[in-house]
Image (cartoon, rainbow, N blue to C red; front, side):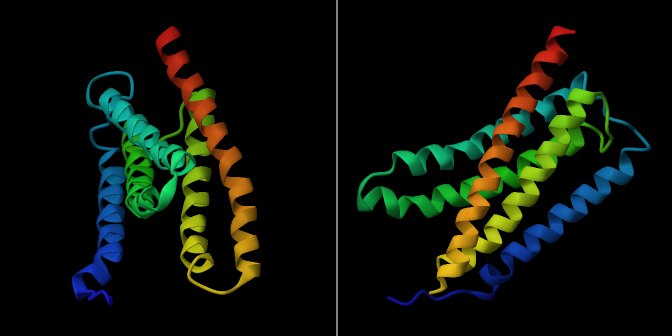
Length: 171
């Protein structure tokens, strides 16, 4: 059965990317007027929301590993969309949490590793689109090599985020 794609759906990713970029730019510009402090109030809760969204993005990985059977495999694209959305929204909230600035060493490590994971995810999303919709085995090998990079970056992000959270509440 052939799917009919409406023009709005075709433009939705670009529209969402534009809106997210506009919101991030507005937040960055506003961060100089009325700074949000990551230690209390709105800034603190933005950090919790962003970390929760990034933790939610792990649900795709867990679901993919636990998927058995054709019915579970058909549900994976929805889980992947959740992974992509939460993998973009969470870091955006974290940027507002840190007020678009670097801070202490442990928070810098967490922020920079988050940036590396997001950049790796954007590259992976691009490779995923072509690796599974083409006959190119070379591209599939590149995608497999990308996975070897993305997974350790995610581990570094998880560890550095947990150290950051522990240090903030400990000291």
